[in-house]
Length: 64
Image (tube, rainbow, N blue to C red):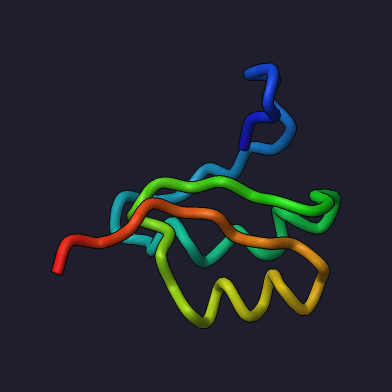
């Protein structure tokens, strides 16, 4: 994860077969307000989990 000034704030090393959305919740423990991600992070479950911690997940929209 990087902040709005491109500074690294969190790193997680994973295998290529892991879902990159899985560690977001634990990595976002120190995030306040908004977390921005690309369309690959669209997930209702992730959005709800982050919202419980006061974080709004903002992503692009999937093509229909």
